[in-house]
Image 1 (cartoon, rainbow, N blue to C red):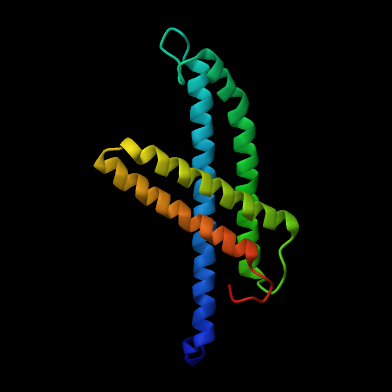
Image 2: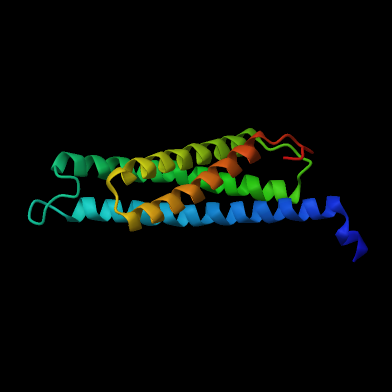
Amino acid sequence: MAADLRPERAGHRSAVRRRRLLAAALHFELVWLLLVAVVIVFLASHLGSDSGEVTGTRTSDLLLLVLAPPVALVVGAALIGARQAVDRLATAPSEALRRSRRAALWLAALGNAAVVIVILISLYHARTTWMVVGLALAAAMALVTVGCVRAARRPPDGPR
């Protein structure tokens, strides 16, 4: 019990807790990404000229059908790799991350940053309720972005 009260032990617990939260957030983002991709492809493929297009033109709908799955696949692979990197940091913090896992962390951070920018831009004409929800979502995704960047830049045995 006395060993658990030492400052270095408490710092280790805090780091492990942050890594678990980051891993959970990355997992949640993966599920969210897959759901959004399925909805986009479903709407773009099933709404036709009879009921109105998703984007306004048939060409844009076809472009969504072509682009959404590969983009979702790349970002999904990055989220999986980033989660593996975070898990690896939690189990073996003294070992350096492989380049592929570090690249996955950077790509996940880039994807999150892009979503944060899109959310903030879309809030320009939002009502108050959507402003609060959008800002909360953007703040959460910004925290995940910072966590991914910190994990990607972390040297082996470093305190970060």
